[in-house]
Length: 243
Image: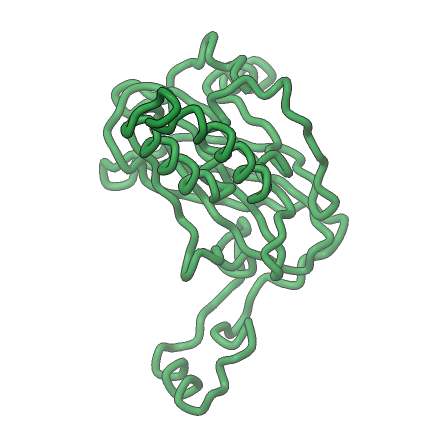
């Protein structure tokens, strides 16, 4: 089993990216500094300035920032441990459903937050990225169909319509018959996300899973890099050092 685990680990690398994304103020300061150099009046060009502006808007999303930072040597980054969650382990595999390759990421974690939300992103290096952030970017409920062996069940659609008409759908759990919260501090849970590879591309990929509390504050973040060839996981090799 130890040999099998070691062999499996060569197929991906992960790190705790909690607290690594810069604040909006830090991004704004960096943008202003680089914008002076990229502006056509200072020896730059329209293309450079427009590319910098587009990058600044994109990186305002911590998820998008961490997807790209996964490919960069993070040894210089100041890592701040999360007071809200403890990441125990991360596992990644490619599974095929109906012939479609899907990324299945499993996160073992414990948290003091009784509930929260999750967001997930995939990035094919140099090609494109996709972000799963739920309605209005808030994320998806940790309390329903996120935890392994979830016991969550939704109310019938007709009942949800009645609730809405009677303005009885204001509580966070009004859509559920049963759910998996509150989470218990000290217990280790396994959260599972299963999403398709959004493009057919051989090369390096990054995936990021973020957990936030009900107020939108980050409580955990993990970034995973992996390589695919013909829609199969292949050893990272030297690329593993990037995390």
